[in-house]
Length: 192
Image (tube, rainbow, N blue to C red; front, top):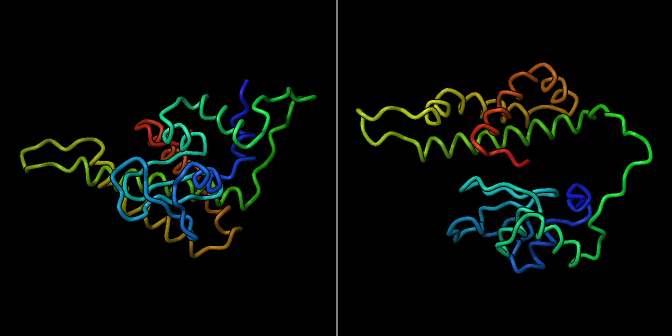
């Protein structure tokens, strides 16, 4: 069985993008491969990419699969071959315990969910807007009207807080973040 988690840990997405012909600037930005992009709008993070124009989001295997028009499994195998890593997972010796997230991990999880959710709502606002006053509003457009301002407020609050404050805020509002994540899953905008 292919260990996608291990591949994501071992293969830096920026190195893979550069190796496969994408020009990534020093800020980690590249022209998006998911739409006709003239100015770099796709950001390469440590463990994933995100396009701020079209909302495309994924990990190194998603990027490789799209670049070569292959399945995610074939992309994982290609990455293993190109970066000389083992593609299979060895079974754990003992059952792993679920560990508690650190405050930094909680803060980054919150930011990841918020980023995806805001991008999805901006996409809905643009692409599901009614053409006339007689047109019935789509659920996607309504959700963007109801939640975009609040999600952007949370985004701003995230940057004005320390890691400990972010973790506490995440814990206090776990229900809201679960709803954001559920909405991302419902519309297919989650990266997992």
